[in-house]
Image (cartoon, rainbow, N blue to C red; front, top):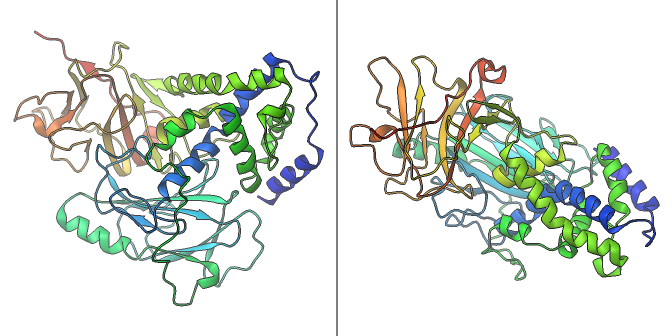
Length: 465
Protein backbone atom coordinates (compact mmCIF):
# COMPACT_ATOMS: atom_id res chain seq x y z
CA UNK A 1 0.00 0.00 0.00
CA UNK A 2 2.87 2.38 0.75
CA UNK A 3 4.13 1.82 -2.79
CA UNK A 4 0.94 3.46 -4.05
CA UNK A 5 1.73 6.63 -2.12
CA UNK A 6 5.32 6.61 -3.42
CA UNK A 7 3.97 6.47 -6.96
CA UNK A 8 1.67 9.38 -6.17
CA UNK A 9 4.45 11.51 -4.65
CA UNK A 10 6.72 10.88 -7.58
CA UNK A 11 3.93 11.80 -9.91
CA UNK A 12 3.24 15.06 -8.12
CA UNK A 13 6.89 16.02 -8.45
CA UNK A 14 7.26 15.29 -12.13
CA UNK A 15 3.77 15.90 -13.56
CA UNK A 16 4.18 17.60 -16.95
CA UNK A 17 2.98 21.11 -17.68
CA UNK A 18 0.11 21.26 -20.18
CA UNK A 19 0.86 23.38 -23.23
CA UNK A 20 -1.52 24.34 -26.01
CA UNK A 21 0.45 22.45 -28.64
CA UNK A 22 0.57 19.25 -26.55
CA UNK A 23 -3.05 18.11 -26.75
CA UNK A 24 -5.73 18.51 -29.40
CA UNK A 25 -9.43 18.73 -28.61
CA UNK A 26 -9.95 15.17 -29.83
CA UNK A 27 -7.10 13.90 -27.66
CA UNK A 28 -8.46 15.78 -24.64
CA UNK A 29 -11.87 14.23 -25.21
CA UNK A 30 -10.34 10.74 -25.37
CA UNK A 31 -8.20 11.28 -22.26
CA UNK A 32 -11.05 12.92 -20.38
CA UNK A 33 -13.42 10.07 -21.23
CA UNK A 34 -10.96 7.52 -19.87
CA UNK A 35 -10.32 9.70 -16.80
CA UNK A 36 -14.05 10.02 -16.16
CA UNK A 37 -14.49 6.23 -16.26
CA UNK A 38 -11.40 5.70 -14.11
CA UNK A 39 -12.55 8.16 -11.45
CA UNK A 40 -16.24 7.27 -11.43
CA UNK A 41 -15.97 4.83 -8.48
CA UNK A 42 -13.93 7.23 -6.33
CA UNK A 43 -16.18 10.22 -7.03
CA UNK A 44 -19.30 8.12 -6.46
CA UNK A 45 -17.94 6.77 -3.19
CA UNK A 46 -17.21 10.30 -1.99
CA UNK A 47 -20.64 11.63 -2.87
CA UNK A 48 -22.26 8.58 -1.27
CA UNK A 49 -20.16 9.13 1.84
CA UNK A 50 -21.25 12.78 2.03
CA UNK A 51 -24.93 11.93 1.71
CA UNK A 52 -24.87 8.98 4.09
CA UNK A 53 -22.96 10.84 6.83
CA UNK A 54 -24.85 14.13 6.60
CA UNK A 55 -26.67 13.71 9.92
CA UNK A 56 -25.80 14.86 13.46
CA UNK A 57 -26.44 11.38 14.91
CA UNK A 58 -27.37 7.91 13.65
CA UNK A 59 -30.80 8.10 12.01
CA UNK A 60 -32.62 4.85 11.33
CA UNK A 61 -35.29 6.56 9.26
CA UNK A 62 -32.79 7.36 6.51
CA UNK A 63 -30.12 4.73 7.39
CA UNK A 64 -27.42 7.35 7.87
CA UNK A 65 -24.82 8.06 10.55
CA UNK A 66 -21.92 10.48 11.09
CA UNK A 67 -18.37 9.49 10.12
CA UNK A 68 -16.93 6.78 12.34
CA UNK A 69 -20.30 5.56 13.62
CA UNK A 70 -22.44 2.58 12.70
CA UNK A 71 -25.98 2.85 11.47
CA UNK A 72 -27.57 -0.50 12.27
CA UNK A 73 -30.72 -1.23 10.32
CA UNK A 74 -33.56 -2.74 12.28
CA UNK A 75 -35.59 -3.65 9.21
CA UNK A 76 -35.06 -4.14 5.50
CA UNK A 77 -34.94 -1.09 3.17
CA UNK A 78 -38.19 -0.32 1.39
CA UNK A 79 -39.10 1.12 -2.00
CA UNK A 80 -38.45 4.69 -0.81
CA UNK A 81 -34.72 4.02 -0.23
CA UNK A 82 -32.54 5.88 -2.76
CA UNK A 83 -29.04 6.27 -1.27
CA UNK A 84 -27.51 3.20 -2.93
CA UNK A 85 -28.56 1.47 -6.15
CA UNK A 86 -29.52 -2.21 -6.07
CA UNK A 87 -30.12 -2.46 -2.29
CA UNK A 88 -30.74 -5.86 -0.71
CA UNK A 89 -33.61 -7.03 1.48
CA UNK A 90 -32.05 -10.26 2.72
CA UNK A 91 -29.73 -9.04 5.43
CA UNK A 92 -29.73 -6.25 7.97
CA UNK A 93 -27.08 -3.68 7.19
CA UNK A 94 -24.51 -2.38 9.65
CA UNK A 95 -22.92 0.46 7.74
CA UNK A 96 -20.14 2.87 8.65
CA UNK A 97 -17.90 5.33 6.84
CA UNK A 98 -14.40 5.82 8.21
CA UNK A 99 -11.59 8.26 7.62
CA UNK A 100 -8.38 6.40 8.48
CA UNK A 101 -6.01 9.08 7.20
CA UNK A 102 -5.09 10.21 10.73
CA UNK A 103 -5.52 7.08 12.85
CA UNK A 104 -6.93 3.56 12.62
CA UNK A 105 -10.30 2.43 13.93
CA UNK A 106 -11.02 -0.79 15.80
CA UNK A 107 -13.98 -2.92 14.74
CA UNK A 108 -15.19 -5.25 17.50
CA UNK A 109 -17.48 -8.17 16.69
CA UNK A 110 -19.13 -10.56 19.19
CA UNK A 111 -19.37 -14.33 18.99
CA UNK A 112 -21.68 -14.89 16.01
CA UNK A 113 -22.25 -18.60 16.52
CA UNK A 114 -23.59 -20.17 13.31
CA UNK A 115 -25.15 -16.93 12.08
CA UNK A 116 -24.20 -15.95 8.53
CA UNK A 117 -22.63 -12.50 8.45
CA UNK A 118 -20.24 -10.54 6.30
CA UNK A 119 -18.22 -7.39 7.06
CA UNK A 120 -16.68 -6.38 3.72
CA UNK A 121 -14.54 -3.25 3.74
CA UNK A 122 -14.27 -1.20 0.58
CA UNK A 123 -11.55 1.24 -0.37
CA UNK A 124 -12.33 4.59 -1.93
CA UNK A 125 -11.94 2.89 -5.32
CA UNK A 126 -14.60 0.27 -4.37
CA UNK A 127 -12.15 -2.65 -4.13
CA UNK A 128 -12.87 -5.02 -1.23
CA UNK A 129 -9.59 -5.06 0.72
CA UNK A 130 -10.86 -7.18 3.63
CA UNK A 131 -13.89 -9.37 4.23
CA UNK A 132 -14.29 -10.73 7.76
CA UNK A 133 -17.26 -13.06 8.00
CA UNK A 134 -18.62 -16.56 8.25
CA UNK A 135 -16.66 -17.79 5.22
CA UNK A 136 -13.28 -16.26 6.05
CA UNK A 137 -12.99 -15.85 9.82
CA UNK A 138 -15.78 -17.99 11.26
CA UNK A 139 -18.04 -16.96 14.11
CA UNK A 140 -15.70 -16.27 17.06
CA UNK A 141 -15.51 -12.83 18.67
CA UNK A 142 -12.70 -10.70 17.26
CA UNK A 143 -11.17 -7.22 17.11
CA UNK A 144 -9.97 -5.82 13.77
CA UNK A 145 -7.71 -2.77 13.43
CA UNK A 146 -8.55 -0.90 10.23
CA UNK A 147 -5.52 1.19 9.25
CA UNK A 148 -4.86 3.66 6.46
CA UNK A 149 -2.08 3.54 3.84
CA UNK A 150 0.31 5.74 5.82
CA UNK A 151 -0.08 4.18 9.27
CA UNK A 152 3.12 2.75 10.79
CA UNK A 153 2.10 2.07 14.39
CA UNK A 154 1.86 -1.14 16.39
CA UNK A 155 -1.45 -2.93 16.82
CA UNK A 156 -2.54 -3.95 20.34
CA UNK A 157 -2.04 -7.61 21.14
CA UNK A 158 -4.65 -9.96 19.73
CA UNK A 159 -5.85 -7.65 16.96
CA UNK A 160 -5.92 -8.48 13.27
CA UNK A 161 -4.65 -5.57 11.16
CA UNK A 162 -6.65 -4.80 8.02
CA UNK A 163 -4.88 -2.14 5.98
CA UNK A 164 -6.90 0.05 3.64
CA UNK A 165 -5.15 1.44 0.56
CA UNK A 166 -7.19 4.66 0.90
CA UNK A 167 -8.33 7.13 3.56
CA UNK A 168 -11.97 6.41 2.71
CA UNK A 169 -13.25 3.11 4.10
CA UNK A 170 -16.79 1.87 3.74
CA UNK A 171 -17.75 -0.93 6.14
CA UNK A 172 -20.80 -2.49 4.55
CA UNK A 173 -21.77 -5.16 7.06
CA UNK A 174 -24.56 -7.62 6.41
CA UNK A 175 -26.14 -9.99 8.93
CA UNK A 176 -28.58 -12.62 7.73
CA UNK A 177 -32.08 -12.53 9.15
CA UNK A 178 -35.06 -14.69 8.27
CA UNK A 179 -37.42 -11.76 8.80
CA UNK A 180 -39.47 -13.27 11.63
CA UNK A 181 -39.99 -11.18 14.80
CA UNK A 182 -37.96 -13.71 16.79
CA UNK A 183 -35.03 -13.63 14.40
CA UNK A 184 -35.11 -9.85 14.11
CA UNK A 185 -34.70 -9.71 17.89
CA UNK A 186 -31.81 -12.18 17.81
CA UNK A 187 -30.01 -10.27 15.06
CA UNK A 188 -30.59 -6.92 16.77
CA UNK A 189 -28.92 -8.30 19.91
CA UNK A 190 -25.84 -9.28 17.91
CA UNK A 191 -25.68 -6.02 15.97
CA UNK A 192 -25.94 -3.99 19.16
CA UNK A 193 -22.52 -5.42 20.06
CA UNK A 194 -20.83 -4.28 16.83
CA UNK A 195 -18.64 -1.30 17.69
CA UNK A 196 -16.13 1.09 16.13
CA UNK A 197 -13.56 2.91 18.23
CA UNK A 198 -10.68 5.22 17.25
CA UNK A 199 -7.43 3.46 18.17
CA UNK A 200 -6.48 6.30 20.54
CA UNK A 201 -9.64 5.61 22.57
CA UNK A 202 -9.51 1.82 22.49
CA UNK A 203 -9.41 0.22 25.93
CA UNK A 204 -10.82 3.35 27.53
CA UNK A 205 -14.42 4.36 28.19
CA UNK A 206 -15.61 5.61 24.81
CA UNK A 207 -18.94 6.92 23.60
CA UNK A 208 -19.37 8.41 20.11
CA UNK A 209 -20.34 12.11 20.09
CA UNK A 210 -24.04 12.60 20.74
CA UNK A 211 -24.23 15.24 18.00
CA UNK A 212 -21.88 16.05 15.12
CA UNK A 213 -21.96 19.29 13.09
CA UNK A 214 -23.45 18.79 9.63
CA UNK A 215 -21.92 20.46 6.58
CA UNK A 216 -24.72 22.70 5.22
CA UNK A 217 -23.17 22.64 1.74
CA UNK A 218 -23.90 18.91 1.33
CA UNK A 219 -26.94 18.08 -0.77
CA UNK A 220 -28.37 15.24 1.29
CA UNK A 221 -31.69 15.09 -0.56
CA UNK A 222 -30.53 14.17 -4.06
CA UNK A 223 -29.33 10.59 -4.62
CA UNK A 224 -25.52 10.34 -4.89
CA UNK A 225 -25.66 8.82 -8.35
CA UNK A 226 -27.80 11.67 -9.65
CA UNK A 227 -25.32 14.16 -8.24
CA UNK A 228 -22.34 12.42 -9.82
CA UNK A 229 -24.02 11.94 -13.19
CA UNK A 230 -25.02 15.60 -13.22
CA UNK A 231 -21.51 16.99 -12.66
CA UNK A 232 -19.79 19.01 -15.38
CA UNK A 233 -16.12 18.50 -16.22
CA UNK A 234 -14.89 21.41 -14.12
CA UNK A 235 -16.44 20.07 -10.92
CA UNK A 236 -15.91 16.38 -11.61
CA UNK A 237 -12.22 16.51 -12.39
CA UNK A 238 -11.46 19.02 -9.66
CA UNK A 239 -13.06 16.70 -7.12
CA UNK A 240 -11.30 13.67 -8.57
CA UNK A 241 -7.88 15.34 -8.39
CA UNK A 242 -8.48 16.36 -4.77
CA UNK A 243 -9.70 12.91 -3.73
CA UNK A 244 -6.67 11.15 -5.22
CA UNK A 245 -4.38 12.84 -2.67
CA UNK A 246 -5.74 10.92 0.33
CA UNK A 247 -6.95 7.98 -1.75
CA UNK A 248 -3.84 7.25 -3.81
CA UNK A 249 -4.11 5.45 -7.14
CA UNK A 250 -2.58 2.00 -7.42
CA UNK A 251 0.88 1.56 -8.90
CA UNK A 252 -0.70 -0.15 -11.92
CA UNK A 253 -2.60 3.07 -12.70
CA UNK A 254 0.60 5.00 -13.57
CA UNK A 255 0.15 4.84 -17.38
CA UNK A 256 -3.33 6.34 -17.19
CA UNK A 257 -2.19 8.94 -14.65
CA UNK A 258 0.47 10.06 -17.10
CA UNK A 259 -2.18 10.61 -19.77
CA UNK A 260 -4.45 12.42 -17.32
CA UNK A 261 -1.62 14.77 -16.35
CA UNK A 262 -1.41 15.94 -19.97
CA UNK A 263 -4.82 17.59 -19.50
CA UNK A 264 -4.17 18.91 -16.01
CA UNK A 265 -5.75 16.14 -13.92
CA UNK A 266 -3.08 15.41 -11.30
CA UNK A 267 -3.55 13.83 -7.85
CA UNK A 268 -3.53 16.47 -5.15
CA UNK A 269 -3.24 19.45 -7.52
CA UNK A 270 -6.02 21.93 -8.08
CA UNK A 271 -7.83 21.41 -11.36
CA UNK A 272 -9.11 24.57 -13.06
CA UNK A 273 -10.77 24.03 -16.41
CA UNK A 274 -10.79 27.75 -17.14
CA UNK A 275 -6.99 27.93 -17.08
CA UNK A 276 -6.46 25.19 -19.66
CA UNK A 277 -5.88 25.69 -23.35
CA UNK A 278 -9.27 26.26 -25.07
CA UNK A 279 -8.91 23.09 -27.15
CA UNK A 280 -8.15 21.00 -24.07
CA UNK A 281 -11.00 22.60 -22.14
CA UNK A 282 -13.41 21.99 -25.03
CA UNK A 283 -12.47 18.31 -25.20
CA UNK A 284 -12.77 17.79 -21.46
CA UNK A 285 -16.13 19.58 -21.39
CA UNK A 286 -17.53 16.82 -23.61
CA UNK A 287 -15.82 13.94 -21.83
CA UNK A 288 -18.16 13.48 -18.87
CA UNK A 289 -21.13 12.78 -21.10
CA UNK A 290 -19.04 10.47 -23.29
CA UNK A 291 -17.68 8.64 -20.25
CA UNK A 292 -21.10 8.13 -18.69
CA UNK A 293 -22.46 6.81 -21.97
CA UNK A 294 -19.67 4.23 -22.14
CA UNK A 295 -20.37 3.16 -18.56
CA UNK A 296 -24.09 2.76 -19.31
CA UNK A 297 -23.30 0.62 -22.34
CA UNK A 298 -20.94 -1.51 -20.23
CA UNK A 299 -23.70 -2.25 -17.73
CA UNK A 300 -25.62 -4.04 -20.48
CA UNK A 301 -22.76 -6.44 -21.30
CA UNK A 302 -20.63 -6.75 -18.16
CA UNK A 303 -19.33 -10.31 -18.50
CA UNK A 304 -20.26 -13.91 -19.26
CA UNK A 305 -23.85 -14.53 -20.28
CA UNK A 306 -25.81 -17.78 -19.79
CA UNK A 307 -29.57 -18.17 -20.27
CA UNK A 308 -29.88 -14.40 -20.50
CA UNK A 309 -28.18 -13.91 -17.11
CA UNK A 310 -24.97 -11.90 -17.01
CA UNK A 311 -22.24 -13.03 -14.64
CA UNK A 312 -19.67 -10.72 -13.14
CA UNK A 313 -17.09 -11.47 -10.49
CA UNK A 314 -16.77 -8.25 -8.51
CA UNK A 315 -14.93 -6.68 -5.61
CA UNK A 316 -11.38 -6.83 -7.01
CA UNK A 317 -10.93 -5.02 -10.32
CA UNK A 318 -7.25 -4.32 -10.99
CA UNK A 319 -7.05 -2.13 -14.10
CA UNK A 320 -10.47 -3.10 -15.45
CA UNK A 321 -11.65 0.48 -15.06
CA UNK A 322 -14.75 0.29 -17.24
CA UNK A 323 -15.96 -2.85 -15.51
CA UNK A 324 -15.36 -1.27 -12.11
CA UNK A 325 -17.31 1.84 -13.12
CA UNK A 326 -20.21 -0.24 -14.47
CA UNK A 327 -20.45 -2.17 -11.20
CA UNK A 328 -20.37 1.14 -9.33
CA UNK A 329 -23.30 2.45 -11.35
CA UNK A 330 -25.61 -0.55 -10.90
CA UNK A 331 -24.38 -2.19 -7.69
CA UNK A 332 -22.21 0.01 -5.51
CA UNK A 333 -20.84 -2.00 -2.61
CA UNK A 334 -20.49 -5.30 -4.46
CA UNK A 335 -18.72 -8.14 -2.64
CA UNK A 336 -15.91 -10.47 -3.61
CA UNK A 337 -17.13 -13.32 -5.82
CA UNK A 338 -16.32 -15.94 -3.18
CA UNK A 339 -18.54 -14.10 -0.73
CA UNK A 340 -21.37 -13.22 -3.10
CA UNK A 341 -22.17 -13.22 -6.81
CA UNK A 342 -24.95 -11.30 -8.51
CA UNK A 343 -26.16 -12.72 -11.83
CA UNK A 344 -28.44 -10.18 -13.46
CA UNK A 345 -30.86 -10.19 -16.34
CA UNK A 346 -32.99 -7.65 -18.15
CA UNK A 347 -34.20 -9.99 -20.90
CA UNK A 348 -36.36 -13.07 -21.32
CA UNK A 349 -35.39 -16.34 -23.03
CA UNK A 350 -36.04 -14.75 -26.44
CA UNK A 351 -33.74 -11.83 -25.70
CA UNK A 352 -36.60 -9.34 -25.34
CA UNK A 353 -36.47 -6.69 -22.61
CA UNK A 354 -38.31 -7.55 -19.40
CA UNK A 355 -41.42 -5.41 -18.98
CA UNK A 356 -44.27 -5.40 -16.50
CA UNK A 357 -46.74 -5.43 -19.37
CA UNK A 358 -45.85 -9.13 -19.77
CA UNK A 359 -45.89 -12.15 -17.46
CA UNK A 360 -42.88 -14.39 -16.84
CA UNK A 361 -41.81 -17.54 -15.00
CA UNK A 362 -38.53 -18.95 -13.71
CA UNK A 363 -38.48 -22.69 -13.13
CA UNK A 364 -36.01 -24.49 -10.88
CA UNK A 365 -36.03 -28.22 -11.47
CA UNK A 366 -36.04 -30.59 -8.50
CA UNK A 367 -32.64 -30.59 -6.82
CA UNK A 368 -31.42 -27.57 -8.80
CA UNK A 369 -32.18 -24.62 -6.57
CA UNK A 370 -29.35 -22.05 -6.37
CA UNK A 371 -26.23 -23.76 -4.90
CA UNK A 372 -24.96 -21.76 -1.90
CA UNK A 373 -23.31 -22.29 1.48
CA UNK A 374 -24.92 -19.09 2.74
CA UNK A 375 -28.24 -18.13 1.17
CA UNK A 376 -29.77 -16.92 -2.08
CA UNK A 377 -32.42 -14.44 -3.18
CA UNK A 378 -34.05 -13.15 -6.35
CA UNK A 379 -34.60 -9.37 -6.26
CA UNK A 380 -36.81 -7.17 -8.42
CA UNK A 381 -35.54 -3.71 -9.45
CA UNK A 382 -37.15 -1.02 -11.54
CA UNK A 383 -35.44 0.59 -14.54
CA UNK A 384 -33.20 2.64 -12.19
CA UNK A 385 -32.20 -0.33 -10.00
CA UNK A 386 -34.41 0.50 -7.02
CA UNK A 387 -37.09 -1.57 -5.28
CA UNK A 388 -40.60 -1.70 -6.73
CA UNK A 389 -43.44 -0.59 -4.46
CA UNK A 390 -46.22 -3.22 -4.21
CA UNK A 391 -49.07 -4.15 -1.89
CA UNK A 392 -47.11 -7.03 -0.32
CA UNK A 393 -43.98 -4.89 0.25
CA UNK A 394 -42.20 -7.86 -1.31
CA UNK A 395 -38.95 -7.05 -3.08
CA UNK A 396 -37.36 -10.50 -3.13
CA UNK A 397 -38.02 -14.20 -3.22
CA UNK A 398 -35.49 -16.31 -1.34
CA UNK A 399 -34.74 -19.53 0.47
CA UNK A 400 -36.66 -18.21 3.45
CA UNK A 401 -39.93 -18.22 1.47
CA UNK A 402 -42.27 -21.20 1.82
CA UNK A 403 -42.60 -21.90 -1.90
CA UNK A 404 -45.40 -23.79 -3.57
CA UNK A 405 -43.82 -26.90 -5.10
CA UNK A 406 -45.03 -28.61 -8.27
CA UNK A 407 -45.93 -32.35 -8.21
CA UNK A 408 -42.60 -33.20 -9.90
CA UNK A 409 -40.64 -31.38 -7.17
CA UNK A 410 -39.80 -28.32 -9.24
CA UNK A 411 -40.38 -24.74 -8.09
CA UNK A 412 -41.86 -22.18 -10.48
CA UNK A 413 -41.58 -18.48 -9.68
CA UNK A 414 -44.04 -15.96 -11.13
CA UNK A 415 -42.63 -12.62 -12.25
CA UNK A 416 -45.43 -10.25 -13.14
CA UNK A 417 -47.27 -7.08 -12.18
CA UNK A 418 -50.55 -8.61 -11.02
CA UNK A 419 -51.00 -11.51 -8.63
CA UNK A 420 -50.94 -14.95 -10.31
CA UNK A 421 -53.75 -16.04 -7.97
CA UNK A 422 -54.00 -16.81 -4.27
CA UNK A 423 -52.76 -20.40 -4.74
CA UNK A 424 -49.55 -19.20 -6.45
CA UNK A 425 -48.92 -15.95 -4.60
CA UNK A 426 -46.25 -17.52 -2.36
CA UNK A 427 -44.08 -17.77 -5.50
CA UNK A 428 -44.91 -14.30 -6.85
CA UNK A 429 -42.36 -11.50 -7.28
CA UNK A 430 -44.27 -8.30 -8.12
CA UNK A 431 -43.05 -6.32 -11.15
CA UNK A 432 -43.48 -2.63 -12.04
CA UNK A 433 -45.61 -1.34 -14.90
CA UNK A 434 -42.59 -0.79 -17.16
CA UNK A 435 -39.05 -2.13 -17.70
CA UNK A 436 -37.33 -3.99 -14.87
CA UNK A 437 -34.20 -5.92 -13.91
CA UNK A 438 -33.74 -9.10 -11.90
CA UNK A 439 -30.76 -9.89 -9.67
CA UNK A 440 -30.03 -13.34 -8.24
CA UNK A 441 -27.87 -12.99 -5.13
CA UNK A 442 -25.76 -16.01 -4.24
CA UNK A 443 -24.09 -15.60 -0.85
CA UNK A 444 -21.06 -17.87 -0.42
CA UNK A 445 -21.74 -19.61 -3.74
CA UNK A 446 -20.67 -23.21 -4.22
CA UNK A 447 -18.16 -24.38 -6.78
CA UNK A 448 -20.91 -25.65 -9.10
CA UNK A 449 -21.78 -22.02 -9.77
CA UNK A 450 -18.27 -20.56 -9.65
CA UNK A 451 -17.03 -23.33 -11.93
CA UNK A 452 -19.90 -23.01 -14.38
CA UNK A 453 -21.69 -26.36 -14.02
CA UNK A 454 -24.83 -24.64 -12.64
CA UNK A 455 -26.47 -21.55 -14.10
CA UNK A 456 -29.73 -19.75 -13.37
CA UNK A 457 -32.63 -20.89 -15.58
CA UNK A 458 -33.92 -18.50 -18.23
CA UNK A 459 -36.77 -16.11 -17.59
CA UNK A 460 -39.61 -17.28 -19.84
CA UNK A 461 -42.46 -15.11 -21.09
CA UNK A 462 -45.93 -16.55 -20.56
CA UNK A 463 -47.81 -16.71 -23.88
CA UNK A 464 -51.49 -15.92 -23.50
CA UNK A 465 -53.74 -18.80 -24.55
